[in-house]
Length: 172
Image 1: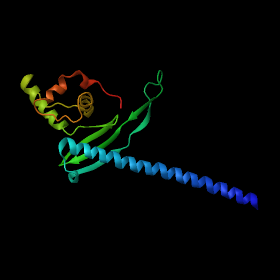
Image 2: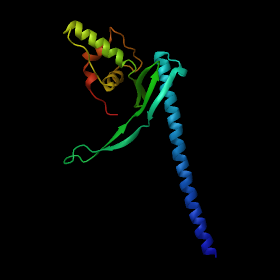
Image 3: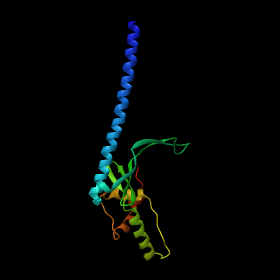
Image 4: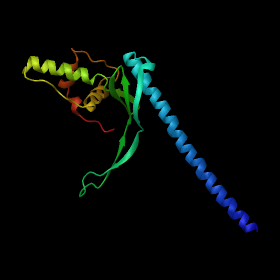
């Protein structure tokens, strides 16, 4: 009888420990998501003076390590950190904010910069140029090397293309 009682206690203790560990894991995810999201919103408010009530969160990805398979023969896998990412909507404009190495970076002005660069290239190079596309990562890299609080204007957006560090893709 006592042996059966001890076995039940061990099983109950095991399941209680598993439940507590899972509760801690899931609650830490919720806390991290809340704190990081609030940090991203504060960053946007500070940089662009956005109204928090008008900022809509469309999507969120928690930062985590991923196992990437790269080259099957020489490098079977690589462990890479993928940063926290948010997709926001503000006044009808969708954009991304990433948290890389403890700092926030955004591509809120990406559409404006593409438009300004297209106008500049059409004016200076060839008036048949009708558009230019570039990736958010280019904007993030520039912000990482200079300032994540920098606001681009029509006059300084071209500096983004003339700077070599813009094209050094960051790991993160």
